[in-house]
Amino acid sequence: MATNVILPALGIAQDTGKIVAWLKAEGERVTQGEPIVTIETDKAAVDLEAEATGILARVSARVGDEVPVAQVIAVILADDEVETEAPLAEAIPALVTSPVTLDSVQAAPDLGPSSYPAATRVADVPARNGRRAASPKARRIAAERGVDIAALHGSGPGGVVLAADVLAAVASPPERSLLHREGGAAPAIQVADHAPAVAAGGEGGGSQGQALTTVWRLMAERTTQSWTSVPHFFLLREVNATRLMTWRERAEEQVSAGRNALTYTDLLVKIVAEALRRHPRLNASWSAGAGGTIKANEEINVGIAVATEQGLVVPVIHRTDELSLRGISRQRTDLVARAQAGQLRLHELQGGTFTISNLGMYGIDAFTAIINAPQAAILAVGRIADRVVPVDGKPAVRPILALSLSCDHRVVDGARGAQFLATVAALIEDPSELTG
Image (cartoon, rainbow, N blue to C red; front, side):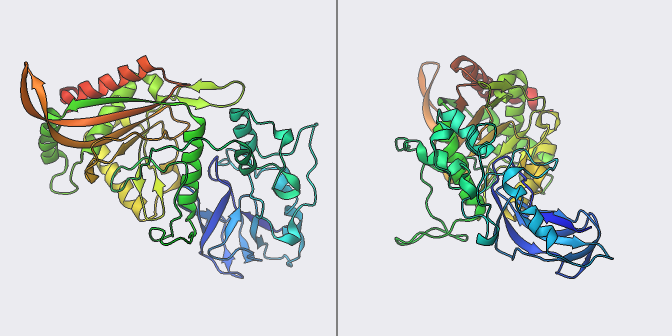
């Protein structure tokens, strides 16, 4: 029996995947478990493995194509099987009525209005159990923003209501001035309400819009959704970084050993992991539905935002609180290098419980960041700069580090956020508890 090769949903907000490369040619023999095609998602480029052994046939997606999740992109024929038209044709109706059954699928796909070729679109998708047909993502956004799904016109196949339809029905929010794009080892945030049109390899030019990469487009969608649906509040604090600088100098001799330089981001990851251990509410997540719930995360997994040519990604250092400073530095160096090369693995982009965004290397004094939902908070870090401050009633010059904590008010209140930031500040000013 022929086995369909289906483009899976590799993330909760993924609608499509881009075909980067076919690793096996049509007509070539493939073995179960062998990578056959590389797919670019909003998170990374991932190799899709063959689910059966046989001959790769009927490849319907070309390199560069944006394919909706759950769509059949090829079939694998058994050795004794004669190719027919049935496998692909039979799979099409299921694209709207049911999601793909995969362990990695977290939600049914929210397919775009022009996702299907004209010959394979479903003529009509009736409401089930008296409810208007809509994608799970659309229902979630509608519930969060108080939009009546039944009153919307769906632009999806057969009139299915998509997330874009819900967002279009919501009045445009006031212009936001927060804009953050990072590079190097730590950008976490992202873009303002309206993302600029950017080509795959550079900035947009002139008055003509240019195509966005998949990563950039979904970054824009997610940051817009977070900024317009998550009730942000911000806490600001300036910290004396004298001892942090001394710690880095001493630790670099022991940790780096002439290899990769120890960065302030490494130290801050270590400090934040300890602060999250002491203040677990900041390590929690907001879960929508049924009025909303606060989910306590058992692991402390700190993400570091990294800007790449394709867009912003946030690789995650898992079980951060269990790692030494050397272990954090090694993982951070490896993750950032592979993020910029587009070689991150899927699990390295999943499971984050808190994010750090550092713009200090760009000379930024301070900024506020957009929360990486569904996380409860994100720490924005500016540069260390000499400032005149009072010391024992007299003016003195000290290296000062500006911190900004963005919090989701549904999970964290002002007092809890302030206590967490106070712990971070105390550990920066006296990191002796962490130098082991």
